[in-house]
Length: 390
Image (cartoon, rainbow, N blue to C red; front, side, top):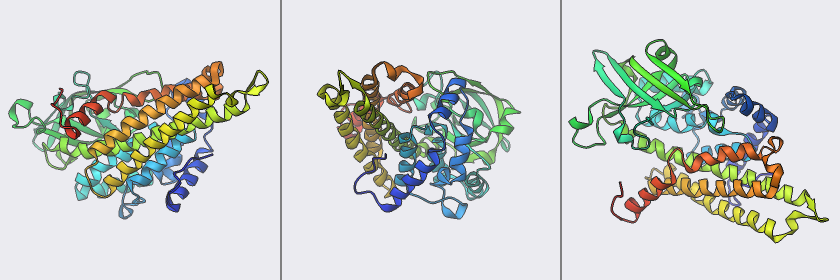
């Protein structure tokens, strides 16, 4: 059973049906096996690619579908709502924005058709570093121009899917921070060929986490890349990624809505079927009220997610909307996850029901890709006009 919005267009409803039909081929046992072995779900990503879903935001002229961000959000939401995990592929959606908006004609012509056909994966986004975390302007990875090449030195962390991507969008400092007038200047974006880089100074170290997220550290030891790998103008990279970060937050918020729907559906069905003291446990208000509350919380967050996507699609600046969508959706998802475990009781901890796996996966999104506290700081400063807190 799916839970689309009541006023949804037929186009979006059809996308939901198509995504769900694909995901039906990847049931819980598939994900449990991947989780147990910490394997990348390559078959699932290949199926999404073949169906054209990962090329949703690529314009038709480059072989994509040219869909709106709102449609892309529906794709990612429905993946999660079926019990699958879109984190194995979601980066290709939001990374695409930077290449589409700021890449050269040559870069777009060279890479976008091959990404749309599934010949290349653009899944890695190198931004966070061990010493700076979400303080992006303090990153230390350097890119020094040497003739017709840039020399990259430094380290990235939490670069998910680095082992399974052909291309990485990399943010590095091309001008030392003390030499720029504004701290937002001097950062540049590069499109790195991962296979070439692995032979030329880049190394990858997987990080084992509580969920199967393919997280990695990436090290750059005087990696040389062609100057043509620069995306847009040198020194403008921070501004470039801001728009992409809004898309990222909206899409991940949509995933959280999908997770919340999955948890609510599982809890509702279990509460209706499970009999204790000769009656369904869902007949008890102590069980049904938390499920109903999570449903209301999810629906409210869902409205904000689609509102943020509409603002983005209409060319506005959805900074506040994207952040609120991420905040509300991640909290709705986590509330639904906790409620679902409580509804299932001991069975919620059994692998065969998939609740414990999805519970672990859902916990991530109140922390990443941006923490709740930083969202609240953004809203306090930029929306409410309070003094900057950091």
